[in-house]
Each structure stands twice: as C-alpha cells, then as structure tokens.
Amino acid sequence: MTNIVDRVREALRGDQRVDPDALIARLEAVRRFLDAVDGQLPDARLVPAHTLVERAGARLALSRDHTLVALAGATGSGKSSLFNALARLDLSPVGVRRPTTGVAHACVWGPLDGANRLLDWVGVLPRHRFVRESALDADDESALHGLVLLDLPDFDSVQHSHRLEVDRLLGLVDLVVWVVDPQKYADRVIHTSYLREFHRHRDVTLVVLNQADRLPPAELPRVLDDLRRLLDADGLGGVPLLATTAVDPSGITELRATLERTVAERQAALRRLAGDVDTVVAGLDELVAPEPPAEGPDETTVAGLERALAGVAGVPAVAEAVEGAYRHRAAASTGWPLARGLRRLRPDPLRRLHLPGPAGGDAGDPAAGPVAATSVPDPTAAQRSALGLAVRAVGDRSGAGLPAPWASAVTTAARSRLNDLPDALDRAVAGVDLGIQRRPAWWRVVGAVQWLVTLAAVAGLGWLVLGYALRALGLPALEYPRLGEAPLPTVLLLGGLLAGLLVAALTRPVTRWAAQRARRRAERRLTSAVGAVGREHVVEPVRAVLTRYSTARRALRDAAGR
Image (cartoon, rainbow, N blue to C red; front, top):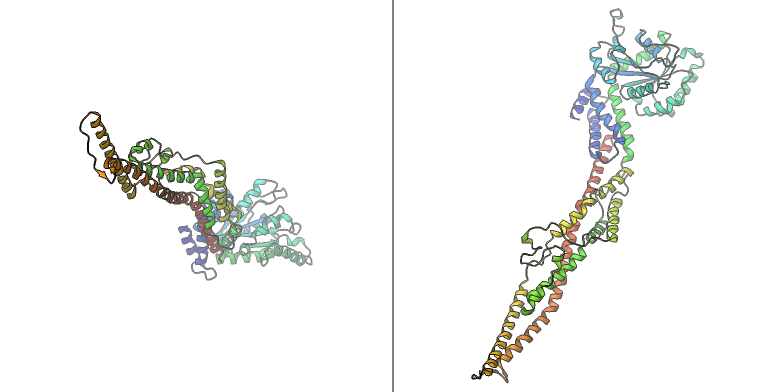
C-alpha cells in the first residue's frame, strides 16, 4: 500500500482540484478495512475492495501521461465508425454482419512506448494496437497526444465472451464514452445493466447520441431531451451528452474537443479511482451499523457463562469433595489416636477425583507433580445443554445490533473453541489450589492434646494392669496414689478416655464449620478458574471480533470521507 500512496501523491502533485492527502487517506482506509475483516466476512463481498486496492497501484504505476478512453455501446450504435472517424483512419472493422467488433482495438495518439505497458495491462493484443502518428498531420493531432482510445466489443453481442470482455475492460479504463443510436438509446439493458452502475462515476462518463444525421433536424432536440431524462433517472445528471455523426468530420468536433480537454487535464484516471472508492464504500456500507458496538458481553451474561462452565467442570462435586476431605483429614489429625489408623483406611474424597490429596505423597500430592487428568464426574446432558445456551447467549447478546455477517461472525467466534473446553476445564480444576494441602495449626494443637490424654489413659491402664499382675503372682501389692477417693491410675485411665471423648465432641462442630468454609473457598477459586477458561475460550474470541468490527467501521467511515 505504501507504493500506492507514493504513486497517488506523485500523480496528484500540483493539482489544486483534488486533495491528494484525502484520496490517499481513503485508499489507506480501504486497506485497513480489508485487514480488519480478513477471515471474518465472506470473500465474495470483498472482491471489489481488493480489486480497487490492486488497481489503484497498477494503474498509476503504468503511465500518468496517458488517458485510457473506451467507446462502449450496443450492436449497431456505430462505435467502430466513430472510432475510425476520431482516428481519421480505418482501424476497426465496420460491416453489416453483427457482431463486428469481437475484440478490443486500440489507437494511441503519440509515441507507443509509454502506452504499451498500459495496453498490456488491459489486455489489448499487439496486433490490435495502432499508432496515430504521421508526419503528414503536422500538429493536427498533437492536442490528443496521450490519448489511448479503445473500441470495445458490443455489450449486447450474441457471443457471451464479448460481454465478459466488455465488463472486464469497463473496470479498467479511465473514461467511458457510451455510444447510443436514435433507435436504441432507450434500450433497457444499457440503462439498467450499465449506465445506472456508473452513477458514481459521473466525472468519467460521457454519453453521445451517434448517427444523429439519421434524425430530422427538428427531431434531434426532442430525442436529446428524452435521453437526458433517462440519464437523470439513471443518476447521471450533469453527465455530458453530445450528438455525433461519423459520416461528417464536423459531426465529431464537439466530442473531439471534449477528449482534448480530458487529455490535457490528465485527471481521468484519478477521477475514476475516486469514483471506484465511492462505489466500493457504498457496496460495503451495509456491513457496518450507525452506532458503535459494545465491547463485549455484559456482566450478567458472563456470570451465566461462569455458572454453566462450573456445572460442566464439576465444581459442585469438587467443592463437596473438598468439604469431605477436610473432615476426613481433620478427623485423622484430631481424633483419638487409637482410631486414626482405622480412619486412614477410608479413601480420601479428593483422591477419588485425582485431585490434590492429603500430605504424604499420595497420587494427588502436588509434590508428586501435576496430574494428567482428573476423575471429576462427566457433565450431565442438562449441564451440557446449559453450557450451550450460555455460549449462545454470549454470542447473541454481543452481536445484537450488528449487521448480519458480523453477528454471525460473533456467534461463530463464541463457539470457535468449544472443543477445547473440556480439556481446558479439566486442567484448570486440576491446577487450582484448593486450600487444604496444609494442616492448620489448631489440628496440631488438638492432636497433641489427644495424644496427651491418650498417653495418660494408657499409663493409667498399664499401672492398673501391673498391680493386678503383682497380686496374681502373690507379690506385694502396689500402693496406688489416690486422688481424693479414687486411685490415681483409675483417674488417669478414665480421665484420659473421657477427655478424649470431650475433645472430640468439642472439635466436631469446629471441624464442620471449618470444612464448610473450606468448601466455599474452594468453590470460589474453582469458579474463578473456570471463569478464566470461559473468558479465554469464549469471551475473548468474541471481543476480538468486536474489536475488528470497530476497526473496520472506523476505516469504512474514513474511506467514505465521513
């Protein structure tokens, strides 16, 4: 695009009627629009814009000293006769058999060297190129030096290839001279299929009523007025309308003078380019809305997506397992030491899900490295359906108010990474710190107290057993110290057992409260983790499309000059 900008700036230098920076900015804006919509909109809608960008550079790189003018018209309009009359040579075949002109012929006024590349670009074969340069002309033809005049095939030819060639060339030339005749000037095809399509190229359009000599002098003004009315209806008000006749040299004087002015101005190529920009922008205008879009889905929609993702990721099941694991581990640390071994035989709820388990190097221990996958229960059909609806809501609400192609692009973006969600959610859940890997300090305190009272009970029991053993052997009995009326060993045994039960009873509600607190904390962390996955896989692709839309909208407004 930089080369295009440089060529346009050079081409427009010194011309006060055209703002070169404005035209450059419009071309830059079209390029920005194409960059923004790449991969978002159907390619078929963007062909004219791509063609414009390519043509702008190619045409201005070829020759700024030549003006490419095409004679276009229907069968029998006298295009070839007019072509020969302007060249003052019999160059293009004229005859009664139709179609006569099957390929484009070109006549170049002035040296052919500078025009050859231009004719190569438009596809005129070398054998159909002619040079209007003769020593006998003296300076008669100097006013047209730089004119490259094309005689196009008939656009209503019975040969479909002829019409295709006309359509191709009409997209390349700088100025079009539409040749109509008194009999077919109101033909529907030329007006609906061609002239109306050129309503944004009024500055590079010229209409001639050829074969005017066939009309009575009194009828000519009436026919011209009727043709002007039709041109106004086609959106071509103000387009020059001339009457010509190829059989009389004076019948093309006005047309020749118009071509001389066009060649002298050397503005036709630039005006054609400006008209092309207008046409492209008009064709793309329906792809943007008057108002800017939202930056993304609203908070309520995102919250709904997070809830749906939490259900699919098994957050409720994991949170419940966290609560159970906390109780399991708390009981194993604060319960009666003699019963702890039996509790350790029960599986840890988090170990069942292949999530971080109790310290000690089990399969879920973080120190053992990241887990390959969790064993969180598969989502139910209802949960999958809820996720689908939530994703659709993100796309629908984010794309509300956008033109149909962009709304579809937003919806597609929202669903673009659905297949990656299961693995991403599983990794997110597996990577969350559930907050129960470390043993709280109060577990250690309660555990120490339990060991202390248990040791006291064991000591009392051992003391009592020793006394019974001595008496059974007939040895002197032990004298137990007494605590009040009760022997000290008995107090230690019963007191240790009762204290252990009391500590356990007092610890149980605290453990329940702490387990519920751990569940809520884990649920928040898990929801945050799956929410981050949702933003990455659903929300961010949507926002990326909306950002592209905003860029494209601004670029198209700049290209339109608004």
